[in-house]
Amino acid sequence: MILMREVQMDLISGEKMENLTSMEKIRLILDKVKTGRIVVLESGLTPAEEVRLIEMTMTEIRVDEFSGIEIESYPSKKGGSFFDKLLGRGIKGRMTVIGPANQLRTIEKDQFQISTKVSVGD
Amino acid sequence: MGFINSLKVSFEVWINRIFKKKRAKIGIYGPPNAGKTTLANRIVTDWTGAASFGTVSPIPHETRRAMRNEGVQIKADGSSIELDIVDTPGMATKIDFKEFMAFGLSEVEAKKRAKEATEGVIEAIKWLDDLDGVLLVMDSTEDPYTQVNVTVIGNMEARGLPLLIVANKMDLPEASPGRIKAAFPQHALVPISALEGSNIDELYKAIATHFG
Image (tube, rainbow over all chains, first blue to last red; front, side, top):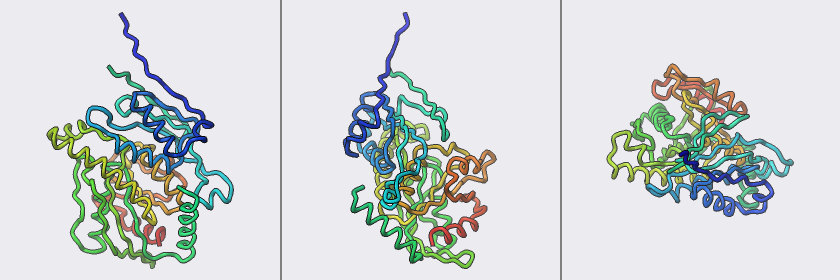
């Protein structure tokens, strides 16, 4: 008999993320990842949000429960108006994949492609 | 980052650019085992004559507290700059105590190191708010597209602060600084071996001109 195991993958639109505060975005991602889901963000996080996500992840690491996240995004793209750049808002987030560190593994990454492997736990 | 904070950071960046600040607080960042503390030790020893200020180890996350060395005067090519150098703990998105046990640590030691390592990552992140620039140390033998590299570079670009990439471990035969340059072509890069000191004078010239 072949046992089929499943992994839930949540693809979250840019529109949904735009309507959330930074803390709400981070909470949403971590809550999903901690239950074993893989999250794909259409438009990613800002660099400041990425670093806060790492910070929050560190506070939630627990021995034998949660060892952290695997997160992969492309290098940021500059953009926006003159005033966006003046205010440091000229960096646009890009497609990002986030999952539990013990399940998601990056195989290869360059500026055009991210290849990952998802392992299914017991 | 709020509107007022963004405006404040941008204003400080412009003022510093206009008046060419000659003292700067520089953070040494990078993934674990990229050679950050080896580089920090070399800079401090070369320019102050002091003994090294950090312990180096093959076990990841040896540096778990940021260490600052103030007033390091670097002179190169007619330029001079006084640096406060902050050697930060390795940045990571995951920390599993079992990885430390593979280096021979007991379970108790490994768990303690893992806990301290998570605190170290948070400390490194907090320091980003208080720096004038970053030396991002990458292991030239490794894939440069790590999320730590992408995130640190993204944050420095968003803040408009100077960043210099140090392609370390050039003493190893598989080193490939070209791969790092191809990944982040918009940033200056200096290939060195912090361990052997090769090309270190080029790094000092770059530091003096880049952060001065």
